[in-house]
Length: 164
Image (tube, rainbow, N blue to C red; front, side, top):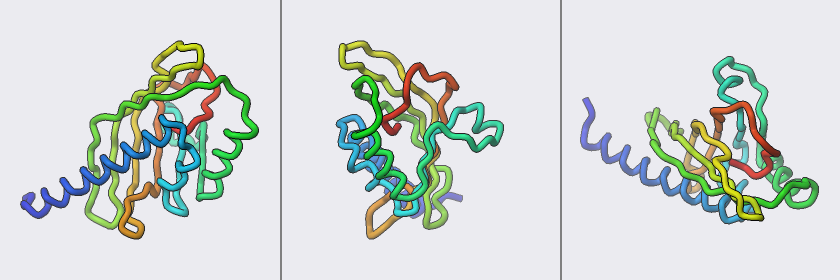
């Protein structure tokens, strides 16, 4: 039986996680990518994988970062080495669901769609899928311990350079 205390705890978790996700999305959509690693724990893991590979248990990811150094290297390469047509993202995240909040880590699932706008103005639905997050508290602040982005399509029309 769910108690009032459990409901209060879940509501607080949901509000805090929703704020974390909103801040994360605005960091990316506003091109403040140097702040992106700060949303993860020092040993955080981030991967973008196709639904096909995820469903088959295949480990190959389109983007994989394990630990803060890899996050920082990704942004450094994006700013100084990668060549790509300038564009911006607009994230829409919905259906946040808490899967498990019984321990120190909170596991969630949500859906997302990203509209990409190119520098000349063309817009398209770029990516959509679902995200599994493991969130934990570090010094009173929620951080992603793990973020797995599962893309519905295995076909991406251009370089996936900006974090999702």
